[in-house]
Image 1: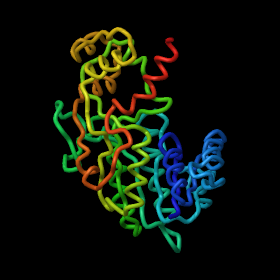
Image 2: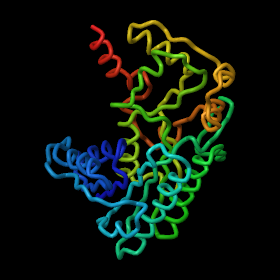
Image 3: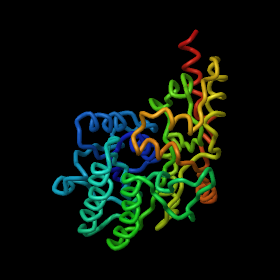
Image 4: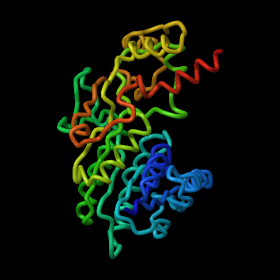
Length: 308
């Protein structure tokens, strides 16, 4: 299978490594020198020892003229990031950039068979701690999550109009190497709420699995681990595992009353939901890290070693 990963960053690099290890031809697309170097590093050291299994190509999804260099593919994964910037930047990348990529491939004599767009469970909005899944109506509460919801429609509808089967992978909060953020939970204060998480390796692994098994065409799939966890309970578990005192806790009301929050930050604090992975499990995906307990094992081990 020939796979092009547009925005081959945190998840994309791991996806490229997993696909290459299974004999697929992968092209990682980045726009910066540092990004291209990261893709080339995966190509030089793939898991199966085959040098050059991942190619690096420079292009920018927001610049349609640059996309002509993208190679033909059986599947395209759009995993570009707006870099944590605001809604305008998000629209430029997720809506305009995604549409540019679809339109570029739609003109090819042999367009891709599939497109996977990586979205976020943020599109669900607030459910007062209730469960959400693929059947739950979207209710984005910020301008940025409204942009993500619009991009999902493009991934499914515009791709379909181009003869490409789209899939939306709705990622929960990503964590893993370089993103464990231990200080946030060990130092406190920790604000109440739920954590919906997925390890980077499983975020990438789920996409690999859906492509290899030819599943979830034309539909969204929630990508989250088995156990949404109360933030206070998680912080206490992490502190106990790391051998440090449990952190200070605070309610949502106390954090909001303390002030110094942007409107968007306050909305995030008020938002509460638990995301179900029943659909992904039913499709047959087996998690490398089913819960935070397995996923944080290496981070805890490294923390304890540094404290000795």
